[in-house]
Length: 192
Image (cartoon, rainbow, N blue to C red):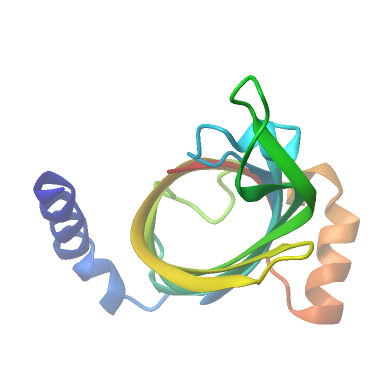
């Protein structure tokens, strides 16, 4: 963790000269995300049928300089499964299921993102980032009380962005003229 902090500080200091130069570039980025969430709960599949579930999020970030963003993200994760009857077990020592359960997570993230971008027309942009997260949870089990709460933590992410502007230049130009959107990316990301 200490090495990561030193690396982040080094990148900020080394890029500080870029912050002073005047660039004709976008300062804000908005992202819509969808993907798979793999919980670190060992018996997730026993209760919810699959090892993963869907995750959706949106984020808004501000570019301090071309290679560094700070931002906020809000997400939603939901899965449905079977609830465990408390204090009961079958003859073989297996759990007794009592009805349906709905498990929801609402992650809120503050993050710093570093991109290896050298030009606004660069079509492949790798990035790394991380930050602080607070995850609110709610679990509703049929015929039982609802569990609610939150947990705080940290996360790291790594990914790659693919610039889509060159695939359909006329649509990219229309998006810029009509809405002021300068670039559109498809990205693939892994987060821990």
